[in-house]
Length: 223
Image 1 (cartoon, rainbow, N blue to C red):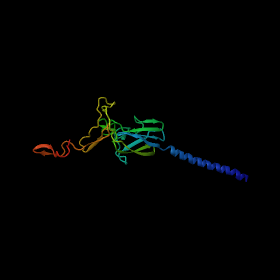
Image 2 (cartoon, helix red, strand yellow):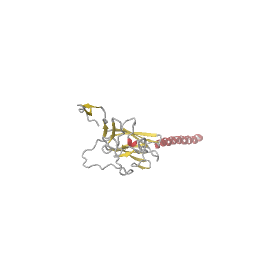
Image 3 (spheres, helix red, strand yellow):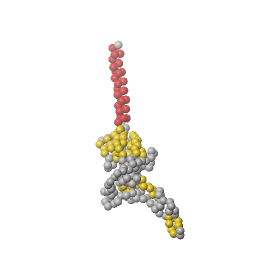
Image 4 (cartoon, rainbow, N blue to C red):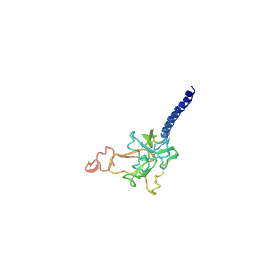
């Protein structure tokens, strides 16, 4: 009986150690996950999200108007703006593992990556009144979120200042046309309105009453 009494505490101890090891392993898995991901707020052109990263390394943010996350919104597309998909980019906040990321910007900036780097400006604003889908990736873990930008607010009684680019003084940063593409569109960087080109000069060229003119003035004017 005495020997049995000695073995029971030893067996109980081994079981406790196994249980503790299991709990520690589970805790390690929990610590490697993205936590408390939520949308803080949205405007017509921007959104802010907050979350807790699993470690101090930067995470990747992807946002798109499509659930497939393709194409990416220009503001988070590293193929247009180098490093724009990282949460440690300028304008975001991070304190250890706590992160706050602002998506979208009421501006247009010169591309820093891809075929239009240093040549073309792209709007960084999100499209107004539009559902957006996003994903945060930190190492091997990822989490998704979604939001809808607000409609354009009414009642503004002031004019927005001229767009400017501190990195290129004197430049007028406004989204340019690629050229030769119709239809073509971009988001107005100040309001979030989707602007769409419906035609190009010379499309459906014809003659009206012996004079050259754009065919069919009864149709929407083409330019």
